Length: 267
Image (cartoon, helix red, strand yellow):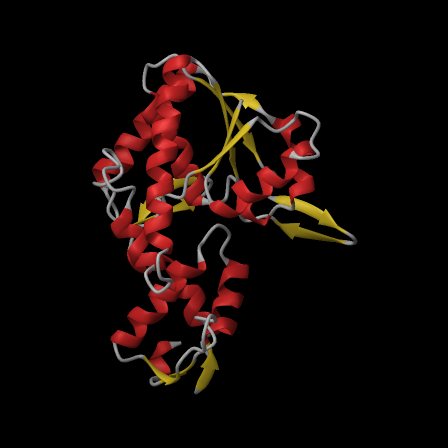
């Protein structure tokens, strides 16, 4: 069985889990980091460059990261096509509140088409009891390796009818080609670029602030949204003259920079 994770973090945790999961994790773990919730989807159908342009937009400030992810996407897509053709079992892991992972599910179903694919999925519970409180699970990348073996019991087959419905929904989203896709009332929908800006504006203080602090507060409020996308939205506000950089980020800490609000209306 192939276990497919829609991100490097979840794939890494699955590989760790496989060492002690007593066969409950597949013999092969594949990562697929397409970031399909973001940007133009015209490059997602052919996957000629593994969505390199979108990945560069998100991760371009980290040298080589986008290129590495793009190359891995191409390898994973090729391996999936082989598995679908040969009827190998492919199990997908996803969190229902993560739009990128939900988009990944739809994309895989479209990729499978009418091939004799054996697809299943594990929908990770979005709530988890931690001591005396409830924690929100926003993506499979947040799961500890030891959690995957138990969650494997939630595996459910993806029937041909569901596959066709998912593939059709993917075609609809591709035709719409909105700037962003989000989970709205439990369903994937195309939304404008500034859809999440309200959360950033909510936590922007008067005067100076550390970028990481604003991002952290917004992320806690927005399940399934990447920090890279929110940083791009803050950068867009800076370009519009609402924010200004006071002190640049240091070394390998891209969000350690200090910015400041220039207008009261930025809030």
